[in-house]
Image (cartoon, rainbow, N blue to C red):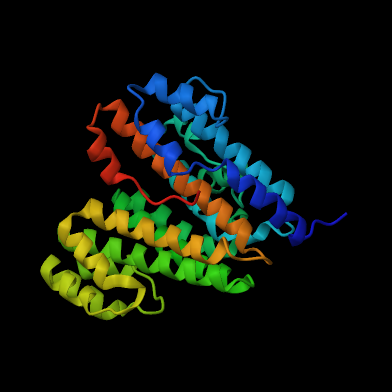
Length: 324
């Protein structure tokens, strides 16, 4: 029998109770070492592995298996899965160029392109096995890395292509939330690229190859400002009224880390406001998925801080908003 969103939403609402809340995060923050952190995660049912990376991978696999089992239309996750496709292509391309076989351990799932097909596409330089949107950018990225060794330029071509495809995929799905979420995500990906480019002195050609068109982002104006340097770019970004960009600029002036935290918090807050109240459609499923991703990022911050014996207050400042 075909799954219904009514069933799926009921399942997701119950599943949300397993997401960590603020009390759980505070308890995890008190762990004295990584072994203690892993034990507490196991006690809370996060997984069974002996290592943090193993626990994270195990939980990710379980999350995707669960979503596949209850989603009436799994294609609602395509705007996120294609990010895995691009990650995998980069991994295979760089691994093949450097003649290092270990790259296969870095491939991630799920994706819309099977790992074998991705490997074949690169090793035989035959991009026809890839989705149509990816074929030309993949060929160009291959060419750039093979002839110039410029990994940054190669990555930029692929990153721009996937942002454009995320916007296109979001338009196909009947979810106003997803369109807003993806637009916001792409907007801030553009901003991050421009900020890094201005800081490192990247030229106009790089920016044109890396930044994509999206609503509320005056690409030409931002490129002109970024080429002039960080101060000019900051001034240009501060004049953008949408997406909370003025607040993002203030966070960036505080520190790049504060800017990253602002963006992550804005995105998960958008998901909480739109998806937790939704009673029909794909939003509750999308919200749960994004909640697991926010939780994963928070746990990685905790793990890194505990591993390096960072002060609790400093770790707490780095933590992101969570969905639970």
